[in-house]
Image (cartoon, rainbow, N blue to C red; front, side, top):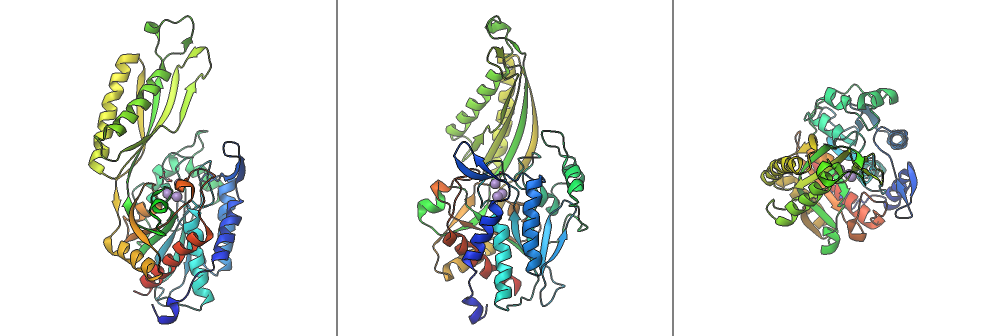
Amino acid sequence: MTADTALVRIDKDRLWDSLTELGEVGAYHDEDTDLQGVRRLALTDEDIAGRELVMGWMREAGLALRRDRIGNVYARRAGEDDSLPPVLVGSHIDSVATAGRFDGCLGVLGGLEVVRTLDDNGISTRRPVEVAIFTEEEGVRFGTDMLGSAVAAGRIQLADARSQVDRDGVSVGAELDRHGLVGDVAVPIQPPHAYLECHIEQGPILAAGGKQIGVVRGVQAITWLELTIGGRAAHAGATPQHLRKNAGLAAAMITVHLNGMVESGDYGRLLATVGRQDNYPNLINIVPGNVLITVDLRNPDGEAMQRSIDDLQAYFAEVEETTGVTITSRTTARTPPVDFPEHMQDLVEKQATELGLTCDRITSGAGHDAGEIAALSPAGMIFVPGLYDGISHNPREYSTPEACADGINVLLRAVLELANS
Ligand code: HGY
Ligand code: MN
Ligand code: MN
Ligand code: MN
């Protein structure tokens, strides 16, 4: 990095304005928090509107846009030697149903801000720089998180991804085709030179430690199960206990058992969440006949994760024996723990330190596209702290203009170093 580029900083207000404007796309009033939230589930009209807004800004910045076969967008700023693999930055703009403005968006709009800043200062780079928008990172509509980046990295086959369906039976493929999102960039994509993603931490660790930047060591393992519990709907008043096949009781037993597994400490730093529960027929005077629940397991230790899955499956047999229900388990996501290369962590830490920012190394609690692209090339992540215990996947999600700018200034400097290597 030359002397004059070392003093270049991004435009904090322009970044904040773009986060604010994108946050209006898919805005809704959240009854639970009485706040304005964001709802841009993948490949819905709101997601497409968000993509169109951001791609318009990318075109205004003179970037050449391409799309791959699963609809991931790559916006390219040419390098002096355009034949070299690009430095790739980015994230996602699809959201969960009760989102804030930062999850994913900071990484995409921050990448765009890096490019705009290079242009503003007439700075060229040896390598091209590309800003990516990955499809269906959240996984809440079609059931597998990091779907787009997993296809880009070759972990999930395109046909399998296209065949995934939402709760209404609408497939990824049908939505990609409906919106005309299928591009001609083959998947898996050509490996970029390196990948960097700036993201809000989505947890309390950085703020609790008073740190401004998180140097991300890696991403913990994720397992998602969809359990279909088949019992028998029956009269709540006339059906004695011994004749019941209570799917609701089975679901409750599994939820409590999961909590016991976490509390036991037998599975390291396991986290378990039953996020979705659909009771049928869901009426006060009928024993639940059929229940669908989802299980989200997280663990930085791959061996302990596998043990928890095996033990949970064994427990299902106990529940079937005790309650007379049948339990069918479908795995909808299964990613191993991912470690980012030391040199990428050191690069992030060096740039943060040279900017005079305090930082700590941290393992990501959430899944990220970087965890997928790490299979293709050296990947790294930059975390910025959130307020209110770093709450996320909630409209209360918030970080400050200064914290966001800090993260993207680290991204700018790291990109400059990588793009001139
Ligand atoms: O589930 C996750 O960790 C990510 O937000 N998709
Ligand atoms: Mn995210
Ligand atoms: Mn998320
Ligand atoms: Mn993510």
